[in-house]
Image (tube, rainbow, N blue to C red):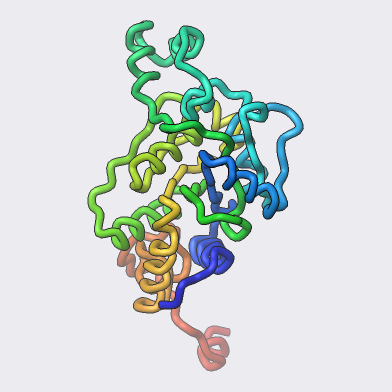
Length: 267
């Protein structure tokens, strides 16, 4: 199969999985020269006020914008700790007390979150089709069946089974994607309390993170399945809709092509 462009990958993913949101290409910048080159090449936006990371992603997944976020644009302590822009301090630990039994457990849980190694300069998020550099992670906000298809195709394409997701208290969008970046493995995780309201996931979206190096393999696997069965669905082989809510092998829900004779007979 010929190598797809990121624009073609996004089109296939949006069309075949019926995604509501653009896949988000995430790029972590640790090199100043690379960041300068990005600024010179990309048409990017920055938030007028400090936002959470999941709020910055709104620009990419809903508005189709490339958003560049540096330290001064990030107003979320959880994300700052995950990105290495803030030390884990007493205030951060105390902020997790509502989730846990006591302060000791809060500290253990906070310190067990994934964190970026090295000195992060900035992070860019954009629709996959608009990415300037190969992404480090591709982040999807999707429903249950869309998430299932993405993960099944990743496991099949990478010959990796079973998948072991990583989810933390707080730090869903920021930490869930950093986990994917650090391990090189796909991740599936739920919204945290912050990303549920601030990050606008009131529809109950599920998060899927695919390593950027693997996104072409995932799309190729999806296309391979479609070519073999005639449809993108794995729940109802050969069907085009990935989340058809119809009982498997149900003898009642069957559709046959009609003709004029059938119509006249029925009338």
